[in-house]
Image 1 (cartoon, one colour):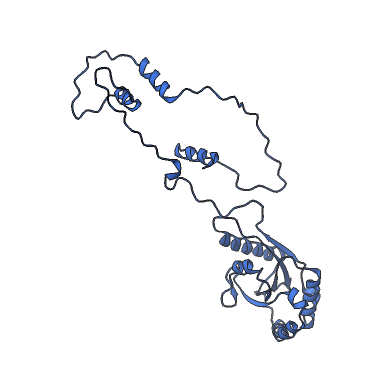
Image 2 (cartoon, rainbow, N blue to C red):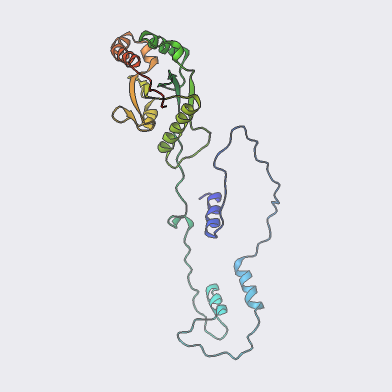
Length: 279
């Protein structure tokens, strides 16, 4: 057990709460070091300190009474017995053994260390303030041009695409999490809700371009999206899944196989009717 862990264990046992910073804020100034007096104080062994207290204790004025069988021993006698010393009026006895319990063996003395959070990034593009296009990692300029060409081919104007918003998790470095997956889901949901509120998005579905036949690097993001029966439980939206744009740009057969699905998406976009304003 490290000295820091031992210190916190004893502070907790004494009922003293130890506070420590949980996150290292970016661009924060380092904590200034204090000048401590490193001269070690002279320590007296506990046995000698206790013996000095016994020698300085005043003699009781009242006449001593004969101790009964059920009466507990006096405090000085008990202490002397623990020190291995016999009283003057009694025969020497064997010192009482004192069992020492190591700190590591105490159950539940220290809580389990929190786990490290998931690490991933996600590129977000909103189409006509209705569809949310998600891409694992940071989308490249080539992939952006391919995305614009795809939607233009199915009848969606390129100006309907918003600028790319990059979401990185965790938000701060050197963080720890009690439940990494659940906290990542809450963070992504809060981020998307904030973007939709600020930019006036009325999201209807998610277009997930993360299927990578040759690489499973988007497995963490799939777990965070929590897609069940073509629906993301994290974002509470239906999900359409397509091949990653990087793979699509290098594979002509993949483009031909995906075209029927893209054409169907174009038809759904055209048949959409905006809801009338309530009067």
